[in-house]
Amino acid sequence: MRRPLPAAAALIAAAALVTGCGHGDDWSQPHPKPSAVGDLGRGFVAPSASPAPEATITPRPGSWSAVRPSDGLRVVLLTAGDDRPTKTLVTAVREWADHERVDLRTVTVSDAADMIPAADRAIGMRPDLVVSAGNDLIDALATVTPNHLSQQFLVVGAELAEPTHNVTAVDWSGASFRGEGLGMSSTYDPASFTAARCAAAIRAGAAAVLSGWTGIVVWVDDF
Image 1: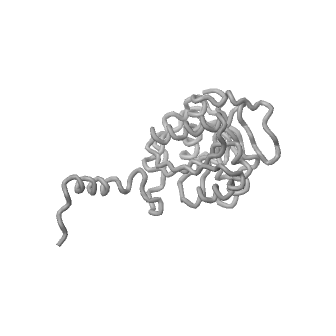
Image 2: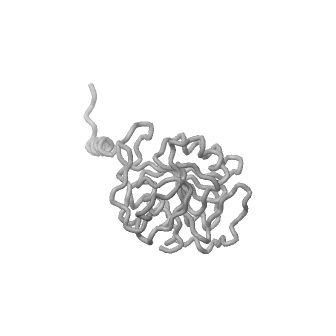
Image 3: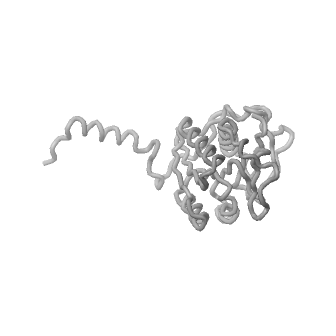
């Protein structure tokens, strides 16, 4: 005969039943397709024409601020590098995820030989979105992303030289690293990776992806 659970254990079990399908749930299980809550403001994209694939848009500062993800968005933060710009980007992504109740998991790469396998691991987790932070990942993403066209990627603080429709980037004059042997941009400035700019980058990029504007570069020189 099963003994009754002690009161404290019963409360824990009940809480587990309530939260089991919420934040931190089992990603092997299906969940509702994520969507944008709220609308992009005037000036995010030109009303007269949709941006072409690989185009760069310069949204009006704050035109993305009314858009947030629906609850339970599954995001993998793929990151490499311990430089200050990368650390600032990582902090911005984590703070955005916490504020918006995003189910965030992190894949950190510490070995150059693990760049492509790490990207494959991130995709294998079946997230709604893979967010990349760190210039070291760009060449690996250029190799991996065309082979996973159903997976959405968001690159913050850098961009791919020839992105496919599933890769969206957020960049600015002090960033814009593109890999593939092109070298660092002459305007690269680590000091431009401020907490405010990185926070704007993840919010603007996520708003673009959630609103269906993918495969483009979102330029946030001013915000």
